[in-house]
Image 1 (cartoon, rainbow, N blue to C red):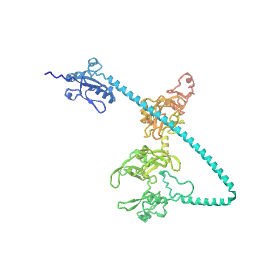
Image 2: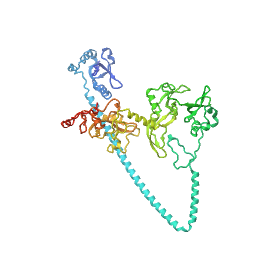
Image 3: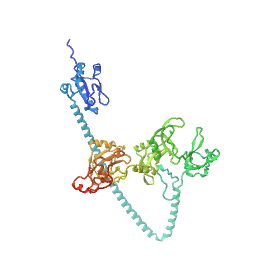
Image 4: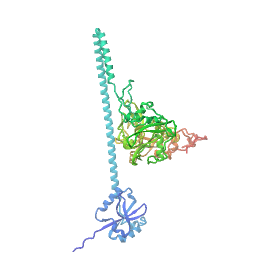
Length: 604
């Protein structure tokens, strides 16, 4: 019988060019890196073997270059599988200095350049395809904007024609009325009497048809009528019936029912809190006059219990609240806005179960209040302003949401929305709190003279509204419908690389190397998308490193002198603005200007 042909196989020896480690390939791991085992004979059964005449090794290297992020870090060498025990020690010894032993290693060296070139070509084609798709999206957006403008012009033209037609009809009616009045001149007294009767009838109908209810909840943005006439309100039944309350218990605190305002009574009878009232509790036979808010709470047996919420000197943030311990950042947030600003696990006071909850501080009493997230409903709109899904998720997470709000009366204003555990709803954060934070952030940095494009953060932000970018985005949103950042290809004179495009869409800082300062001189600026303002902003300093890093070295002195009016000792007498990188006179003419000694501020 003819002897069966012996199968010719190879194994791969791999050298980590970064560490010098020498191993044998046993496959690829989940990230595409070579799975390596010690290059010892006793592990030979685990070596990955390749048919010398098959395409398995091609598939291995294609997968390797497609998945591995550092393909050039590794060098590969082929060794015959049936000679591996004899050759491994020799190959391993030669690979200790591959450069010196290059000639001896050459027959075993695997040339992977073709695989690398193929992968690079495929990546380039994918980038080209993505660019084409981006251009198509931008072109489509431009066409949509053009179409919308055309539709707007058509609607305006139709509206103008309609107004013109209505004016003509009105004139015709007025003319006809004048002719009728002239013709019926002899019946003037009767007409006047009939008219007076009709007016009285209309007045009576108006009185009968006036609205009977006017809900004025602030969070829903509704406002009272502006015509000056009182509106009758339909009284919704209270959650607590008057007969269920032991009013004598209220009097034991020195508060009489008749002394409470209508608003306080409404809150009290619907499990809310009154405003601050004066109570006179008795302790040890002595009566004390204190300020407190009052509320009713149900006990386990269903009875109503009057609970006073006394005014505290300050919130007790140094001790755990229902199983949750406040961090330094938590304390800072609660003191600044009254809201924690995120969901945390808080223990149920009855069952001990830990539940995701919001935490706030009662701004009138300094009491710490929590409410489970399951008991808060995030609305679809505030007044006439719709809340998008991403905005609802921001509120649901407990974060603050800056938003322009339009009420049903048409009034618009800037507000900050946030879930309040104390109000058990989404609230308007008091304006003095969020404006105070913005002011403190500005004062906490070194004061710098602002250019007209930088009103937000002194010394850092230099905003450039989208309408200033040659009108390219005047009618376009900076974000997609899902709230993600819409890609852009350039900013003024700076065209983005593929990496810069990817960084911008990811919300990272993009360096603008071709920017200009206030004097028109080249300088370095930074661009980053601002989530709160919903658009990109430019900065004179890297916003991610603003606390520790000054402007780029080549622009630091230039921006300080040209933009901020500071003095550089070496250039204080120069008449021309400094150029990029300049820290001293640049020629003989400027050197002559710089002769007078000065004690001005030196830029360090």
